[in-house]
Length: 401
Image (cartoon, rainbow, N blue to C red; front, side, top):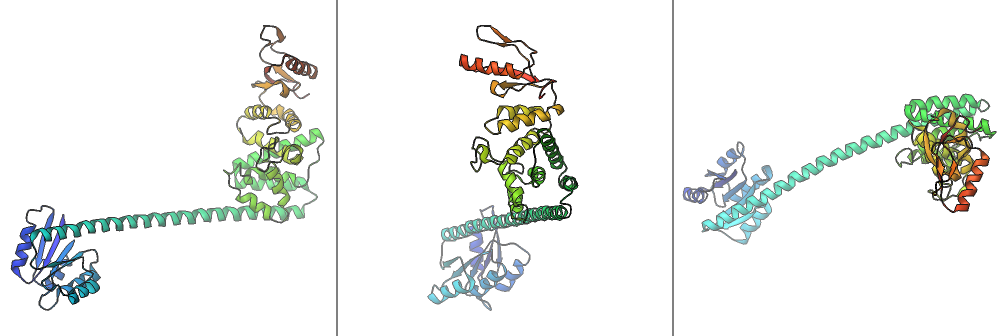
């Protein structure tokens, strides 16, 4: 329901305009014979459009509408006047910002059209104001959320910086006691994130065992790179390299960040930086294998093992990958079987399905435990036949020996 107010000291004009809108069910018309009475109505009733006569006693229509503009700016304002002089027009526009002028005498069609146009413009303006309020409210919510997010990132960065600072101080004080420093770091990262802390410990323990089995001497920085990888590597934190960049900027930790960056590279050169083969530092290649083994399928190491074996020469250094799988197989379910390319066969694997040629000739029966000589013969046969032979195998009890 819309409300129209008519302010005029002429009762005949009040009645005639009321009559014009008498058939409009969506329009309520209220009247006042002077500006004082009209002002009193405005204090208790919402009005959409006001038509005010210019020539009224005590207060003119322009003065009254200026008051309305100052206190009720959303009301559409119309002047009804018999004086269309330039001075009247300028005063009305400058002081009251009126919407339209109705010049006496005016017919009912003009009044109807003017009021309905004023209502439509008011509706659009109100809708725009409401939209602006909603946008402003959404902006305030976004600003609040952004502030919370920025604070969260800042808090996590401060927390990580404090952790790294603590580690650096401990490393300086306990440089000759490497085992103590590593254990301290594992405890700290485990407090920061229990799940990733467990992965970090698995990665480091497997690499340490690998180094002992192969006689590999690791750099002083490598244990820290191995344990921090799951916390700062963009591949482990949804593409966010904030912590890796932070690590690179901290004095004494640049080499650790370098190892983690190198572990993102693919052995065939398709990684982020394009480093290929031995151009990737050996420790970075080892870190790539070990971290993927525990991070890709943390609840099913057999799936990780299968994936690594099938990606040798593509993502992983074949020599490091094969040796790492052999040193870690004791902790796996040896009954888990998988398809292996002949090039990726290792001594100790057991054939799970008869190997036959297309003509039905038996090459090796189910249950055969492979050795180096057998693998060599299979490779030669595949090359001779110029056809790919897939092997369905599992890790046997003698795998890696």
